[in-house]
Amino acid sequence: MKNRTTMRCCILAMLLFASAAHAQPNRLADMPAQERAQLQTQRMKESLKLDSAQVVKVDSINLSYARKMDPVLSGSGNRLSKLRAFQEINAAREKELQQVLSPAQFRQYKQQQQEMKQQLRKRRS
Image 1: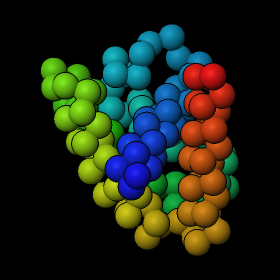
Image 2: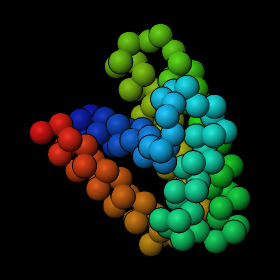
Image 3: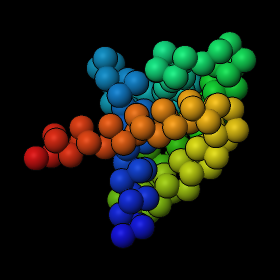
């Protein structure tokens, strides 16, 4: 059960990357890490009302983890191995984000992830 929840959270985080890039014609995996990070930072800046210091830190975190995600997105591993790698990367990213965001912002960030998960479920139905 916990693995399913973790898997769903990871899929949700991938969707957050995708939602930041939804207006882009290219697939997420085809985007450079820097572009993915900028899109995600912009979305977070607007939705979480980040201050200028937080924007700089969040952008750095997003870029670092987008670069770590590149081999996973472009790799030839099976779906399960990619999912596990994504889970590990995303968990580390969230720990860093939690240090930068206020408790209220982090709760809002997690709430947004839940909303994205619900939207995904609706699309699958």
